[in-house]
Structures are given as structure tokens and as C-alpha cells.
Amino acid sequence: MPVIGHIRLGLLCVAWMAALIQVTIGADLIELINFGVIAFIAFVILTLSRLQNDSVLILLLLVVVGWALLDHFPDGNEWAAGGRYVLIFAALLPTMALVRATASMMPSVHRTQGALAQLPASASSGGLHLAANIFGGIINTGALAILSAAIPKDADDHRRQLAAEAALRGMVTAAAWSPFFVAFAIGQGFVGKANSWIAIGIGGVTAILFAAISLPLLNRSFSGGQLRLALICLKPVLMRLLLVLGAVLGSALLFDFTALSAVVVVMPVLVLVQFIRYPAQIKPIIEDTASSMRNIADDILIISMAMLIGYFATRTGAFTVLVTSLYDGVIPGWFALIITPLGMMLASVVGIHPVISSTAFLAVFSGGHADVHPALLMQAHLIGWGAGTMSSVASLSVITGANLFRVRSRDLVLGSNLWTAFAYALVGGAALCLVNMVI
View (cartoon, rainbow, N blue to C red):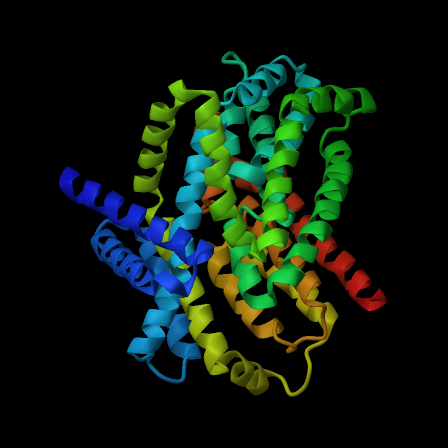
């Protein structure tokens, strides 16, 4: 019913605004924040009957995880505190929808899009990988929509397959360094603010090494000249990317924000600047954002449930009890750093969403339960997220990429990306083990 849809959108907007108030002003306006929590609960209730089957399954599995971990049913005060804790996620995904809609209208993005379309077939895979990593670091799956438009309309199936695989690899591995992924928000809840920022720095190295190794291995004709062509295509957006990352990092340091809080506060301000520069874009961007917000309800519920369970469990000591019952002593760091990305990747192959596997692994290995630096554990989790979303037919990234590039999801997963994801998880985890041994 259209009326219910409008009500849900309005409730989500109220929760979004309340989250911004909570981040910027804090407990001084607790009544407004609590009103936002109530609006979010109402949004959830109206959304339950509209959930897709796979989302229902994921939520049920999360409920089972929560039931197994918690030693008591939360009381009213705990539920209220938990609601305020997850309210930020009611702001994150709508913020990213706003950013995606804005990016799709930017002239610099269109120039890069056109330049990629002019690349020769031999260089297009490398160009798409690098462009997807840059765009994906800011707009996530929105990168696939932008890049699929750069594929010539008369491209054959083979070129479409190679292009889709390259764009997917680039986009999902951006999770290693970008604070704009849900994966970063989940990991930060377990390892803390400072270690999360360190992990971003490590992730930049991870992404560069992955590109340097995978591009020549997966495209034997790739050369330095082709790399130069690909980088030239990205020139129009590089400064804007640095501006966005600098604004987010600067606000986090200046105002002591978490990365998640910095994203939900800074990105709307940057969008407002774009509105001032191009007022004719305001209406289409708002319409596109509203449309996206109607379609991301499942993701909002899933991430909120995962973080709510993590919130309750960390405050009741349930994870410590669980680890003690499984292993007497401190878990070896090498085991945690290898099993986290590899386990997340293998779980995704059989359809287990990374939200579930990452919550479980981080719960077991964080908090001093494993002999591992928290920033390295965070990076292992981010590598696992990328590897998992690259290799699952149930992944939103895979489904979106397959539709946009007009290839089959099965072919996109069971081709070169499956073994690439396995190698990324295994080698990435092993490399982090070496770093953990040195520090």
C-alpha cells in the first residue's frame, strides 16, 4: 500500500534525524533521541511483513545467535539503551543512499565514466577494477551501476563477464580500507575507534597489494601502459575522493567522532555543498534517495539486529563465557587471523551472510580472547567481508553486478572470482599473521 510506504519513509527520516542529533548534541536532547528510537521501532514493525525470504532467514539466524549468547532477556532500560546504540545505523544506510544519488549526478563522475568507455578491451578490466575500488570506497554497490554504463552496448558476453568480475573484485575489496562500508561499522563495535582507524591504513596497503598482484595474474596482457591509461581515466574523481576522505578523517579527529559518526555527519554537509553548486540536481537526487531508502529496509533491519546482539552480549560478558567454554587460555593469533577471513569466505559460499559470520568471529577473537592486535583482527574481518561478498550467489553485490552487467550470478561467482576470493582470504590472513608476529 502506497500510504504505508510513505509512512515507513517518514519514520526512517525521523530516526535518521534523531541519530544526527545524538551524534552532534548528545544526551542534552534525550527526549528527541528516544522519540527517534520509537520511530525506528515503528519502522521495523511496518517493515517485517515486507521482508524478503532470505532476509527473514538471516534475521532468524541472528535471533538464534542472540538466544545462545545472552544469559538473560534484556529489561526495559537495556532495550532503550540498545535502541539508542543502533540508531546510528538508521542514519548510515540512508546517508549512503544520498551519497550514491549525488555521485551519479556529478560531472566528474560522468567524465570518468566516459573515459572508461573509451578504453580498449585489453585495458578495460584493469580500469574497471581500479575505478570500482575508488567509487566503491565511497558509494559501495552504487559503483557497479556507474561502471556498468561504461560497457559498450555491443559488447559480447565474454567481455561483459570479464568486466563484471573486475568491477566486483574492485568494489568488494574497497571494504579493506573504506569507512563507508557496513563491515567497518560492525568491526568498530568490537575493536574500538583507534584500532579501526589503524585498520583503515593497513587496508590501504591491502588494496594496493591485491591490485598489484591480481591485475597481471587475471589479465596476462595487462601492462604498465594499460595501468597508466586506467589511472588517467580516474583523474577527474581522485581529488574529490581525497576531499571526502580528508573531511571524514578531519572531523573524526577534530570532534572525536567515531568513523561511523563522522560519515553520517560529514557526507550530508558535502552533499549540501553540491546542492548549492548545482541547484537543478536537488530534486532528482532527493527522489533517487527516497526510492533507495524504500529498498534498503531489509539491510537496515539485518545490520541493526546484528549490532543489537553484539551490544547486549559485550555488556553482559557473554562472549567471555563462550570463549572460556570453548578454549582454556588465549587463542593463538595466527589461528584468529586466518580463520576469520577464510571462515567468512567459506560461509558465504554456502549462503551464510557475512553479518552473521563476522559477528561470531569478532565476538570470539576480540576483547583479548586471542593473541592478536585488534587492528589486525579488524583488517582480517574486512578482508573476509570482501572475500565473502565476492563469492556468494546470495550476495547483494553479486546479484546487483549480474543484473547491471547482464551476466548470470552463477557465472560471476563460480568463475575466476571464486578462487580469487579464496586466495585473497588465505593470503591476506597469512600476511596479517606475519605482521602480528613482528609487532
